[in-house]
Each structure stands twice: as C-alpha cells, then as structure tokens.
Amino acid sequence: MDFFTYQNNKLFAEDCNVDALAKKHGTPLYIYSRATLERHWHAFDKAVADHPHLICYAVKANSNLGVLNALARLGSGFDIVSGGELSRVIQAGGDPQKVVFSGVGKTVAEMELALNLGIYCFNVESSAELEQLNEVAGRINKVAPVSLRINPDVDAGTHPYISTGLKENKFGIAMDEAEQVFARAAQLAHLQVKGVDCHIGSQLTEIKPFLDAMDRMLALIDRLAEQGIVIEHFDVGGGLGVPYNDETPPHPDAYAAALVERLGNRPLKLIFEPGRAIAANAGIFVTEVLYLKENSDKRFAIVDGAMNDLIRPSLYSAWQNIIPVQQTDGQTYAYDVVGPVCETGDFLGKDRQLSVKKGDLLAVRSSGAYGFVMSSNYNSRPRVAEVMVDGDKDVLVRERETLAQLWQGEHLLP
Ligand code: LLP
Image 1 (tube, helix red, strand yellow):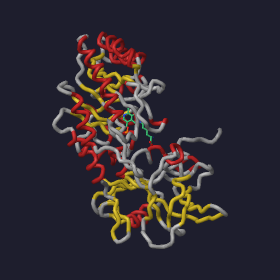
Image 2: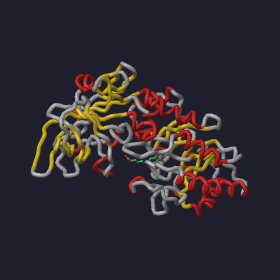
Image 3: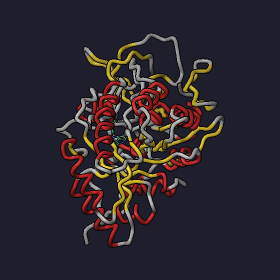
Image 4: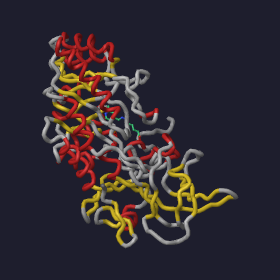
C-alpha cells in the first residue's frame, strides 16, 4: 500500500498534486511519500514486535538525508556499506549504535570511522577482513563487535545481478569454512563475536529461499554453540521483494512470522536489513514528454528523464509501471518511453499503452529504491531534484544540480 493515488483523474502524492509539484520543482523529479516510508518501516517493526529485533534500513536503497532522517525519527537502525553511507546516517540524525556495516571491501579508514563512532556490528565477509579489523581495532584501543557473513549457497531465484547467496558470488564466507573462521574470530583479542549474518539476494518474491538459508544458518549457530561460541544475534539480511507489476511477494508479517517460527526457542535477536521493501513504492520518478516520434513499426515517447536518472530498466531489464500524471480517456498506443541519452539502452519502459502528447507528465512508479542513488552525470546531465511530501506539504530534500556543479573540482590545464 502506498500513497500515490488518483483524485479526479489527477495523480496525487499524499495530498500534493503531482502536476503542481512538477511545476514548482521542475522535471525530471523524484517524489517520495513520507507516510509510505513510515508505513513500510512500521510494517516490518510490528511484524517482529514480540521478538527482540532491530530493523536496519539498507541505506543503499535510498540514502537521501530526508529519507534517512524520517526513518531515524522512527528509531530505525541502518545497514551501511561505506564510510559515506555511515556519515550520511550520522548527518541525518541516525544512531551509530544501531548501525551494521556490510560490504566485502571495507577500507582501514572506514573501519576506523565506524569504530570511533561505536557502531553496533561489523558484518565481516572474509578471513582477510577479519584480521585487518582486529589489527585496526587494536591500534586504536577498541574492541570491534563482529558478525560473520556466511554464504548459505541457496538460489534466491532472482535476477543474476542481484543474487548474492550462491557459492559463485563474491559475498560472504563459504559455509564449509564458517566454523574455522568463527574459531579464529573468537581467539582474536580486539574482536567480540556477536552474530551471524547472511543476505541471499534482492527482490525475492517467495519465502522459501529465506527459510532454506535460515535452516542452514541455524544449524551453523547450533554447531557453534557446541563449541562454546555463543551467538547473540542473527542478521537475516534484506531482500524481501515488492510488487513492481504482478509479483505477489509475502507481506512483512508473513515473512517475519515464518522466520520467527523457524528460530524455535533459540534466544537470538533478529536483525533485518530491508531496503527495497521500505523505499521502492514510496517513490515515483516524474518526467515530461518532450517529443513524440513514429516510424513504420514503432512509436516513441521521448521524455526528459533518462537512464542516467533511473538505470534499473536499462541495467536489469527491470519493469516499472509508467502512468500518466493526468488521466485521459484518449486513444492509447504502444510507446517505448525513451530518454535523451545517446544509447540504445536508454529507455524507461517499452511497449507501454499510453495516451500522451508533448508536454504531458508521466510517473514511473516504484522508483524510491535504487533510483536516484544509482544516478550519474552521464551525458553531462545534472542530477535531478528530490522532493519529500508529507500530507499537503512538500520539502525539497535535494536541490537539482546546477551546470556549474557538473565540473566542480575539475581543472583546466595549466
Ligand atoms: N543487505 C545487504 C548486505 C545487501 O547487499 C542488500 C542489497 C540489502 C541488505 C538490501 O536489499 P533489499 O532489501 O533492498 O533487497 N540495485 C539493485 C539492487 C541491489 C541490491 C544490493 N544489495 C536493483 O535496483 O534491483
């Protein structure tokens, strides 16, 4: 459920008219709904209310300070993958003691920053990283709380680029090495073993792969207990899918209930790292039709938004719904909705039934996650503005880049 609805054929974001927002802030434009973000976060939090838990929103999905601030005010934790994300969390008022640090390539500087801020846990992905973290923590007189990310080798059944829990993927420590690496972690003086984590992929629409992974991880936790290595928390990662089209992913309630049931009576705190499930359907991407163009067998709607602004359709052949900001009952035709970037792969959608003319606005739905954050300046296109609506108010949470910002930090030759 989200708060992007039609009222008298006009698209609204909560109580804000999208057409008016586009006039005020220009296009292309990302619009986020605070009520939707909060609703999705609460859905997770309530789903595990009776069990000790921490919801660590995956910052990579949408790291705008306004978004992070809205979630920080709910008391959310955060899953970060870089010093940049950690700094954003702090800047947005997030609590470092509710931060878990994921990622295969943490640098020494990032480790120091996170240790000095006192984060909740490092999700360590290799033996080499474990040794490095111990060394850094010792040098600055800290003890690093660690979890080991174990690769459970399950097929998440999702797009190969966003599947992460198979042996062939770069993520995590192989299950057959897990006990040995835990034993080593327990020996190291500047580390404190706290948890086990996994993340098997993104946009999962079934519960089964999560449960398969969990069974393997719980069996590991039981074996570790026999060796005297006590695990306090189990971080199940993110990955719960959202409806982009006709997918029917489980509701967070059903998902969390299934996981909690599998835990049995193990006194493990559960950590969740949802990104997409919180942010995707809390955002739309609004773009204006610049030109219509037809050739013998295709119609194109050329819009001002492009792959540099929203890359998911180009990169993953992802399907996101494209809807008119003003509904009409005019004749519809099948259009490829394409941007101005000089690449054949620059499209937002193909074969979409639309009734459009020059100057009309279109909204690409489900753009709140992995939208703006993956944008670039390709073709020297300034990055677009982001707005957060809250009831009938709108806040510009990121200004549109200016042309001068495009070459900020660049220099002519002497
Ligand atoms: N935790 C870890 C360790 C992750 O790697 C990810 C996502 C998440 C949590 C959050 O997963 P989510 O709940 O959002 O599925 N750019 C791609 C998605 C890449 C996901 C990478 N890792 C896309 O646009 O589909």
